[in-house]
Length: 188
Image (cartoon, rainbow, N blue to C red; front, side):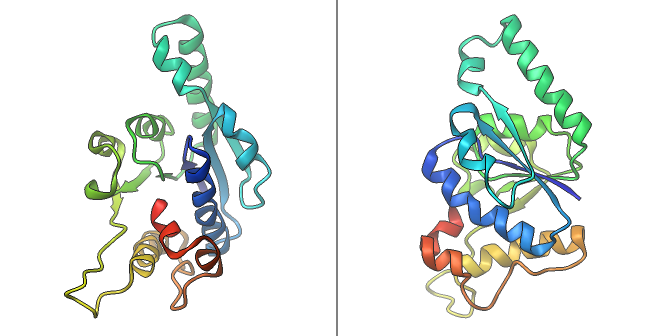
């Protein structure tokens, strides 16, 4: 299965998304994982051991000159690369309009993003076919799982139907979450 992660920018946000790439790789080592990132942040994901391919965007330049010949040419090249890849799943880990547009361009049969209250920009939901509700824990309901367990349970449910097994969700907090802090899982 070919999976595309869309996390375009912000150094800290990209670093906090690394565990998602690792979790996907651990869920099924046969996955082909691609990452879409802004040009200045390409080195952050290019050498990541869980990432097989990197697609580079220049959305800031494209927004400044949306109708220029260079913008049209670059976006067409990116769309062609996505068409050649033919991803089955795209995960928008950013929740912004710019990442939602790129998510849509991938042409994946399944496009997943954060549920409405957890997206940074509500309009970003136009490109998603499925939503991951990252937080379902409430203080008044102690029987509900912790936020990080809820996130992984949601992701596991999604992956189960696609890769036929679920191994992302764990009863124990994953080691990378302990290292980065439990809330880092919710940056996805």
